[in-house]
Amino acid sequence: MNSAIHWVYEGAIVNREIVDDKLEEIVAHVKANEPGALAYEYCLNEDESRLTIYERYIDNNAVLAHGENMQPYIYFFEDAVHVTKFIVFGPVNEEVKELLNGFGAEFQKPLAGFVRN
Image (cartoon, rainbow, N blue to C red; front, side, top):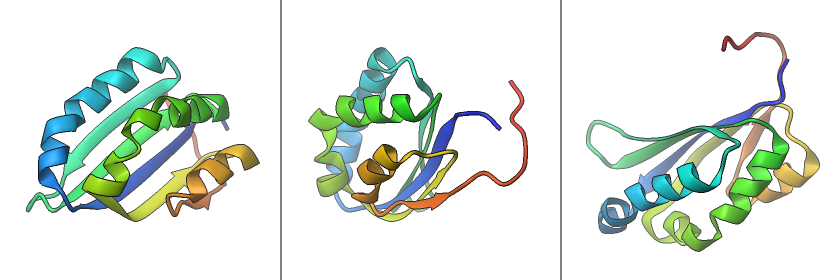
């Protein structure tokens, strides 16, 4: 198994104006400031009422760095999108669990499998 941490976050859009106004800025901010972020993708469901985010980080330290880097945008997940499902995969340490528990995360530990590069 590898050290990567990844998750799928699904949220109900409660303020589409904020989503439309800030999403590209948030993505650019993560891309520019987080070399440990391996994937960071936002998607909309068909009727555009839910936002799904797929994120993948190289390790626990990269997740913690993401938590710090996202501080200026934490309002986005309070004012624009409310979590409905948040499943975290990988060998998460206690510090990351503490960080992500505030968003209602469900943690699943690795059992079997592989990742191709």
